[in-house]
Image 1 (cartoon, rainbow, N blue to C red):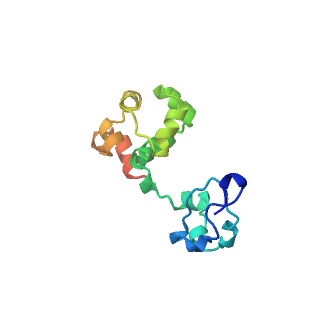
Image 2 (image 1 turned 120 degrees about the vertical axis):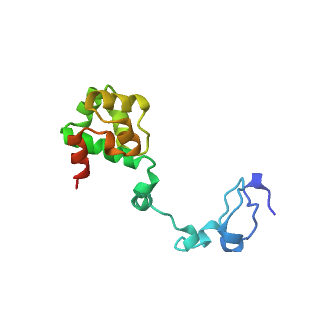
Image 3 (image 1 turned 90 degrees about the horizontal axis):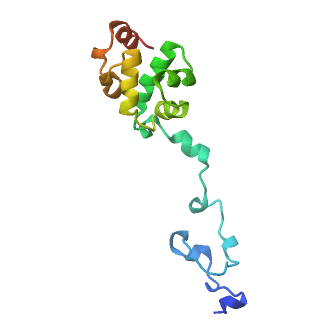
Length: 144
């Protein structure tokens, strides 16, 4: 074996295919033998970020049901995120986080929705529409 300080490689003449599962140990000096592995082989393929995000379903969003109700109500009111957020007293970015389904609606946010629009906490958090005013309940049940 050659001296790493002199620029020799510590792995000797081993090829990538000689290692189990194509895994390599870290070495202080890069070997010249990495190019002998075929990048088209399954263990070297990379998955693009577009393929990963495309495969993500709403199941990955823990609060997608709350987000659906928020978006439905905002669209029913005919307001933009900015207008809706100002009315309930939160930042637009906060509302956007709630509508993404990745963040939970805060208790203060749910209380503001109840105070300003008459949306019950049961409806916003649990999806129980019995406590909604009749016109909103009908609109919720008849949505496409």
